Structures are given as structure tokens and as C-alpha cells.
Amino acid sequence: MKTLTTLLLALSICASAQSAPEGQQWLTYPGGDGPGKGRHIVLIAAEQEYRSEQSMPMLAKILSTHHRFDCTVLFGVQPRPVASYQ
Image 1 (cartoon, rainbow, N blue to C red):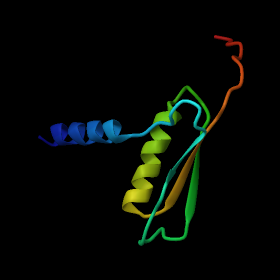
Image 2 (image 1 turned 180 degrees about the horizontal axis):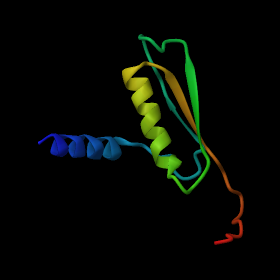
Image 3 (image 1 turned 90 degrees about the horizontal axis):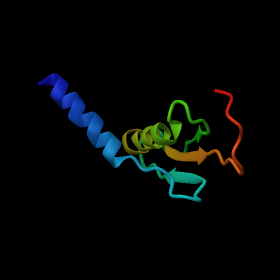
Image 4 (image 1 turned 90 degrees about the vertical axis):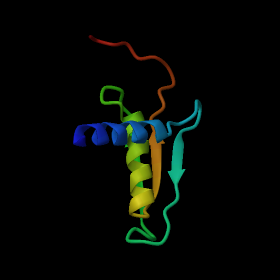
């Protein structure tokens, strides 16, 4: 039962995650009254291997909702394709 609850919680967090629409370079999550009031956290998602473009918005939403920090997620922009050495 605990595993099912954990799985459902993880799925709901992933479903509610917001990634940046095409062309948008940042997301902003306003905080509120609470322990993080008046503090701003900036998270940078600029790599592809660990999927930070998905995890950083999730973390920002958690920090703004539960701890009331103002959060901004910045996304790296790659103007042209780079050769891959794999």
C-alpha cells in the first residue's frame, strides 16, 4: 500500500510539472507568506543528460508552494546544433 501511495504521489507531481513552452526561457513561481517570504531562488536547467528541464520546474513548484520562496527556473538556449561525440 505504501508503494502504491508513493507511486501515485510521484505520478501526480510529474503530471502537474510545467515545462517551458517553446521559445520561453524562464518560468516564475511566486511564493507568499511563510518561511521563504522575501527570498528568491533561481534554478538553472541547462543540460540534457539528467532531464533538469523537467526536474527543476518540479522543484521550483515545491519550494514556492510548500516553503513560499519566489522561484525562477532559467533554461539554457542552444542557438544551433552542436556535434555530439558519442
